[in-house]
Image (cartoon, rainbow, N blue to C red; front, side, top):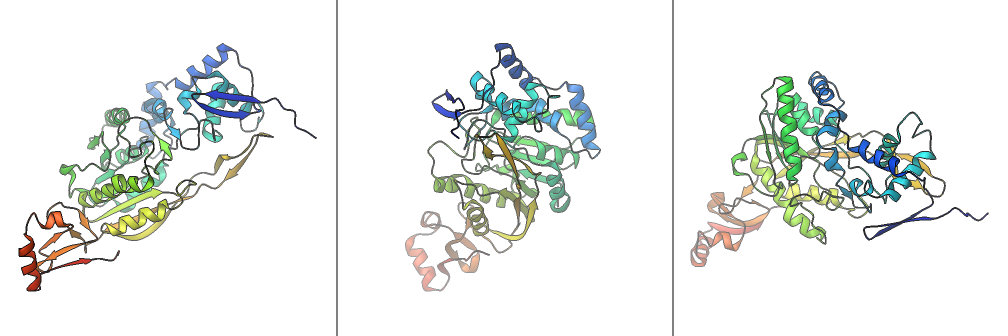
Length: 401
């Protein structure tokens, strides 16, 4: 039998999405959804959640919604046409989400307000339209800090939405963070200040509004553990600050300009025997990300010592949504965390300070140079040739550990 359902094409900001799912809303209902989404919890609820968190609680929803929910709405996931912020400014998109909610009472029960239903739909099934970026599970960060903190200094090289900061605060571990989203950095600094005021703690927090590829000299040889879930190339467009991915950037360029400098900086920040952990995952447009990250980390002076499971909750996936009958499916969203240790057997260029996988060796390792430019800042070509003739210099490459 032919399907004669009416088509509702959504044309907005140069993008098109065709759907048969729709529910008419009044202008008042539309405005109420917008208002409800951006309404912040009262600060007393945030204070209560800080105190419960300090005592071992796991819920951070009030904290997240108070400080960063509006910034999360500005993020566009690569497979989506729009951000949540854009969707909330266009009534036909909200009517599409209202239609989703109206046809699945089990997932979107009537006891929820329309605004809460649509907020849930953003999280569960916004594939190709608009969906919410994820926040890292605080329980996993707790386990990492319990097992890998060796000196009370933790570096979060891609701050995200505050869960790693909160775990560090409740462990009384000094937090060092970088993120190019300067608005986010302001919010996280305020979150940390409020937590310390409410919970009467004095943990040091140092958050820099810059990318992790930019070296911070004062952090050198101070960090015990570095862990984050950095950008997955172009998976999420954060739109604020000098982000690692720019529109049109090629994957190889991102590796060269963001990933490798980040790894090299972390090597400089870590103390002897420090740990470097990273959560990345492959996805459709980037099928070799995990392997490429692993190879670059090993090449730049680290040894892989473990791979930990990151067990997320099983959640509804928009990827599996069937627009024809409005069904949804669950999927397992497991990822992994790679654990590396700073290698003792690593060569650092005497001139520029970069970790080397190949280059010049002088006097059995008294000096190393990663390139001709660095070598010739210290030696002329004639001086280098004389050293070679006396078996005091050579060029070589080192295999990954």
